[in-house]
Image 1 (cartoon, rainbow, N blue to C red):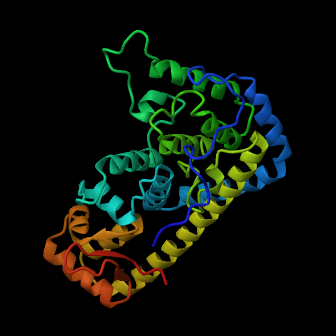
Image 2 (image 1 turned 180 degrees about the horizontal axis):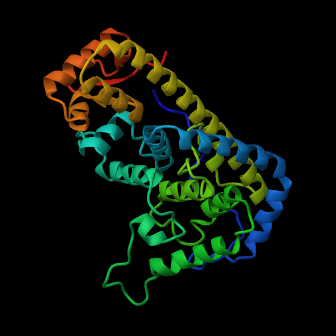
Image 3 (image 1 turned 90 degrees about the vertical axis):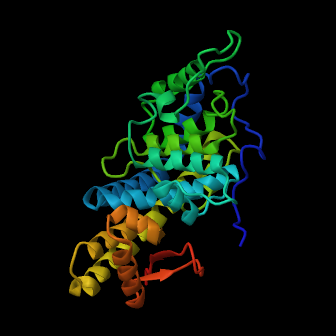
Length: 329
């Protein structure tokens, strides 16, 4: 079924922030416009910040697998910004085992795989943007060519000058200044969104990133004034955070149920498989075998037992390359 997007991409809508040559870094004067926008939406910003704080606290107290699960879901949803439309099952196979099918775009998988890595850990973008992006200027770059270092420097200059703004506002501003700074020449909105999501959560210690796309792409639309963009950003983030919290509710309830149902089983494989289905939205038998270190026979036996017990369900309907997911009743 074709997914409906509620946001046109940068390629479809003009960017009408303060104009200027694309090769030039955005002027720090734009910070005043975003400061005014923040003042207009201060109450809404406080509510969203509170929800993000609640998510941060929950992830801080929860298992590491929760962060990984949310990052996979977010990255798969962000892939729609570029028109890549990477499904969660294909992403899971690529991330876990570097497996792809003939119908998969390896460049798209690599882009979304990069997003998963950046949403699950590592230094933030403002420490070293080039390293965060995994992009460097070639050694033999022409003297007349614009260097990534210069483009990144202009963007970072504005971000550094805006430290009085709330991190959520700074993230929104950074996302919308991305193309003006010349950083979006590849048409890759995933980079801009992943960078912004890390900045928005930079004050936290449990949530490595702030969800932006789980509730839909509306917050990432690129039309209107800074006040209009920030309003959509806050609404989109609010929806994404609520979606993330519901996801954690579901997986926490499933984990408790699985522990009770599987209490009669002995050995380490059942425990390891529960961990796999906590961390991954979907899993295959080869994935589970690689992650648990158990034998193929033990994995298949336990998967069959979990499916018969109503803990997991097969979602591909194939005789081969079968995928299961936790049955979040």
